[in-house]
Length: 93
Image (cartoon, rainbow, N blue to C red):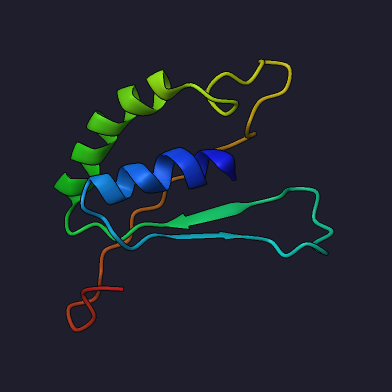
């Protein structure tokens, strides 16, 4: 949560992406596998590639509990990235 709030979302805003959604399960969710969904609208695939190339070094040098998590207590078990292409008549979120 802290990483998304203090590092990732501000980086998106600085990159010109002003709308991003971060969603997580409600407090009474009993699932063992806790998930966080981040929806980011990119204008093109090249914008996504450019952000990933520029963001990775910035996020790694920023430090914090997320990047400096011990290998015995990782910040996450799995990261999954899914890219979706918009429909012709609905090109934006």
